[in-house]
Image (tube, rainbow, N blue to C red; front, side):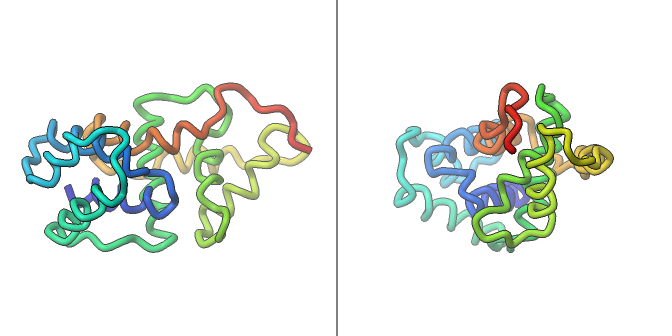
Length: 173
């Protein structure tokens, strides 16, 4: 529960988990046997729920489980591990998906070194004018698992994964 809440807070920090995503995350937590009243209430919410409704419930859970809001580096690392878990189960068809996913976490503040490194590489993935370190992509895919259930991983990963192109994008420069 603690790890799932930490990852969810990390996703919120990067605007990759909206209030309407909480019901799916909570359903995954219920399936895993968590019967907290706040989890049940979140699971029963509609997709159109607002932050006014979810935030008090999520804050109560975070307080109960001692989950602080992660900083920029920690949140990027948590989301990198989440996406590595998701890609191990559901591979992507696009080249270097980890670099592409993590690049989206860099702007606008560029607070994470890992996200900035991916952001700098992403521009050159489709043009062939620079050498890309695909060993770095492999290293990202081998990040340690968060050991969350598949349903929680998919619910948390869905908003970030939806930013991946479904085919190789055209050359950007």
